[in-house]
Structures are given as C-alpha cells and as structure tokens.
Amino acid sequence: MRVGRLSTEKSRSLRACRRLPRAAILFAAAALFAAGCGGSSDPEQSAVTTSEVPKILVTIGIWGDVVANVACGGIADVETVIPVGGDPHGFEPSLRDRERMENADLVVANGLGLELQLEDTLAAVEDSGTPVLQIAEQVETIAFSSAHAVEDTHAAPDADADHDADHDAHADEDAHADEDAHVPDAGHADDAAHADEDAHVPDAGHADDAAHADEDAHVPDAGHADDAAHADDADHADDADHADDARVADEAHDADEVADADAGEEHDDHAGEDDGHGHGSEDPHVWFDPVRVSGVLNELARHLTDDAGVDVDAVAACLSDYQAELAALDQELEDLLEELPADERKLVTNHDALAYFADRYGFEIIGTVLPSTSALAETNPAQLEELAETIEHEGVKAIFAETQHSSDETEALAARVGDVEVVTLYTGSLGPAGSGAEDYASFMRTNARLIVDALG
Image (tube, rainbow, N blue to C red):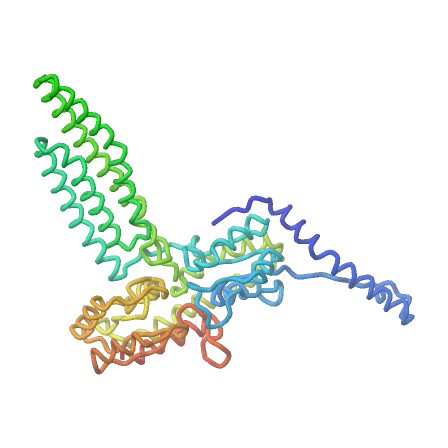
C-alpha cells in the first residue's frame, strides 16, 4: 500500500477547500429563498443544513461493489473509474478521470499491475494528497503459474549451460588472447540477451549493451598491449613480448568475466519483473476467491473511516453484515461446485485469470489461450498447438472466453480440437443490468454455474 506525501489531515483540508465555494453558494441561495418566501420564524425550520457524504473512487466495478457494501446505506458516495465491460488491463484514464480521483476522499485500486495504464495517474493522485489504497496488496497472493512462465523457467538453464560452456572454453584459449577479448564477450552477452528474450523481459537488450560497454572499456587496454608488443618486437625483446601476451590473455579473461557478471546481473534484475506482460510476479485477480475478499475488508473499513471520514459505527455494522454474506456465498459456491467430480475440474481459459478460483475450489488450470495473466498479450501458434494436444489428452470439455475480449482465438482453438464448447465468463468486469452479474455475489454465482454446466 502506498502512502501519500501529504498527511491525511492536510488532504482533507485541501479537498474541503475545493468544495467550499459550492457549499457556500448553496447556503446563501437557500437563505435568500427562505427570507424571500417569508417562511416560519422557527429557527429549526428556517435553518439550512448542508452536508456531503465522503466520495470514494474505485478503479473497477468489482471492487466498487465490495466498497459500496462496506460503506452501505449511502454513508459514502462510491463511484467507479473503469466502466462496465471495460478491460482493467488496458484502460487509459482521461484528464477528467484524474480530476475525479484527485477530488475524492479515498481512491481504491486493485494494484499488483492490474490497472497498468492507470499506475502513473494513481501515483500522481496520491502525490496530490488523495489517499490511495491498493487493496490486492493486502491479500495473500498467488505467483504466476501460466504455461508461458513454465516454458521460461525451462529455457533459462539451457542458456546458462551454454554460457558456462563458452566461458570454460575461453579460459583454455589464452594463446588466442586477442580474439578471446572480443568474440566470447559478444557470445556471452548474446546468450544472456537470448535467455532474457525467452523470459519475455522487455529490457533484455540491456544485457547486450552492458557486455559491449565492458568490451569497449577493455579494448583500449588490449590495443596498448599490442603497441607494447610491437615496440618489444622492434627491440627484439622476446621475453617482454611473451610477458605482454600473458598480460593480454589475463585482461581478456577478466573482460569476459566482467561481461558475464554484468549480463547475469541484468538478467537477474529483470527476470521476475514482468512475467505476465504487464503484471509483476503476483497474480492480481484476487477477487475470484470470496474468502480472500472477506479477509481484506477490515483493512478497507479502516481506510474508509480514517482516510475518508466515513462514520465508524455505520461502517462496522455494514462490515459485519457483508462478511456474513460473503461467508454464505463461499458455502453456496462450494455446494454448487460439488456437482463436478475432481477429475472434471480442469480449466482452459482465455488468459490466466482464474488461479484464485482454482485454488479455492480445487480446480486445475490446464492452460491458457494467451500465455499470460494479461489479456493484452498475443497468442503463440506453437503454444496453441501444444495446448490443443493437451486439451485432447485431458479430455477437457470446454474453453472459457471472457466478456470483455474477443473470442476469435478461443473459437479457433476449439475448432482445431473439435467437440469442445466455448463458454464466456465474466472476469475483469461486472456485467450490465440484467446479465446476472451486476454485483460481486451474482458475478461469482453466474461464473460458477457456467463452469459447472460446461464441464458437468
């Protein structure tokens, strides 16, 4: 959870000042109206009271409904930033969105890289004094487990083995010191770069740059060594020439080790940063487990009262009721999913969004159409062919698409396999009115029923 630079008290003062002119105008207008109409002289009847409930801005509708249940009964004005049906992975905020967040008493975001295009705006909003709660950071998370990530972990050891083999071979080639000072360095740097490319790390190219930088740093030394060697040849000082050769060999070996170390450090720095094409190392789709959602509500309630000034007693009553409702929802889902035997609980999804659902209710993620936890990723033909074979082998009955994304790739995969149904789930957004997924509880019920009907 990030902490704003301005104190909570100062933040409230700033936001109160922004709202003061409107409140003052309303008060004055009401007073004039009362005086002009000659109403009752009773002070209690003629007094005008103006008050504004705290305003909470929430990035996605799923969490918006959760927040509205903890701040129930109108004790806070809860609005969402991303509209129904919008993709939180790719939504880009407008200047108006930023203004709304800056004028809010509290902003609630999922975090963990879900709202990738919103991250800079959220940071700026927090810096302006508006508290921002990254709610998924309060949850016990699950690391990425997509097939793409598994492929990367298998690719890295091969690259390292080749890299070490090149290094060992180089160590035995002191007689060709001048060649070794250049070729092995480039080779090792390329190995590191390719290893990073396999891991889909955007900054993999820096490893190559680091290696070349080290080569450039050491090439002048090799050049000076050659100059000294020529001078010795001119003087027929064979002993000095041999000494120079030994020194050049040592420098070449050192240059190679520096390049190896730099490339390795670059790989280590980035290897775990962006396994999901936009997310960090943890899966952000935490709302698919109602027990995890319930577990974070106490922290949410604290921010509603401390940061936004929502009434403490009212929040406590709402919190208790909603936690009981989520416990009942979890039991209802378990009872519904009991219809599926264990060997039928196999999921193939559009992108890796159901890990928390699988973890809670005993499902296995067989694979994903997009090899990522971000729906912005692109398909891989070789990976899709492998997934088709897995679906056939496992006897999977359905592939699950998503309402906010095209199902073209999913339909093509189903056609390739044959006798596989494509079923569309609600994943990153609530559904519109009448969809049966208008709020968080119905969202979870509808998805569970769709899964049972497709796999049963």
